[in-house]
Image 1 (cartoon, rainbow, N blue to C red):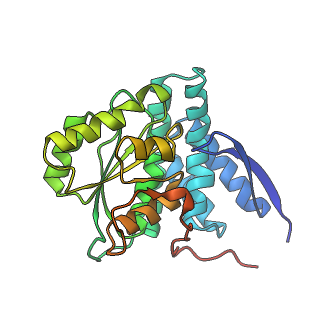
Image 2: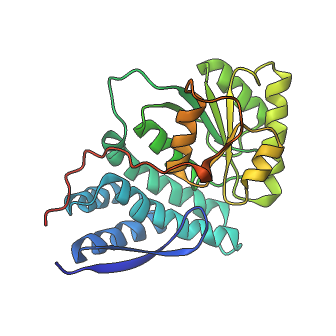
Image 3: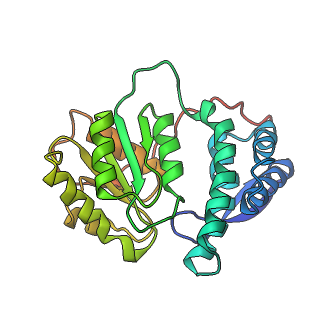
Length: 262
């Protein structure tokens, strides 16, 4: 079977990484990523389905198609070669594709393993990374409430109260907004919630040491380890010590998408 390759921008590190597949799969991923990059939200759902029809698993379509297109614009934003409206338009396009993938990634009719509140911290408008973490958490059986971007500490606190969250996850793309992770944790403490909700910290500039120093319960470098960290935080095995997601084994989620035929 012929093999083709393409390079995508890793949404977490910003590095170029190579993915491979059949020529039809790579063509479908390139087309999907281009539609997302250009913010063409009306055609993204059909392009997402077309990628699935090549036999690609839903997670691969999400990361190497939808997320790849968004990561291109996110990388431009970090280099100040793109601006907030472009990021938001691209994110809207990606989300229309997520509606196609979500039923394949998220099980239904099951009691959630736990309730998670997610958000990008105040001052930060990036939606890259957080969205995929939310989808993967849902795929692992969690109930997820996404506060979106530029989330104030007060908004985090109110949402946690409203949904009785077990875990709060914070993200930041910019080093200038990282300290709002700490400010948000302080707000939880002042509201009397710190002992009632586990805190996960992540995002491109956030390190395990930073997360531990500000009082978070866990740090994860990517979506799959974020899922494993969340599972550990709500399990009886968690002893209250800081969870370094980078040291956890990344476990593949069950995908209901038919495998590509040989």
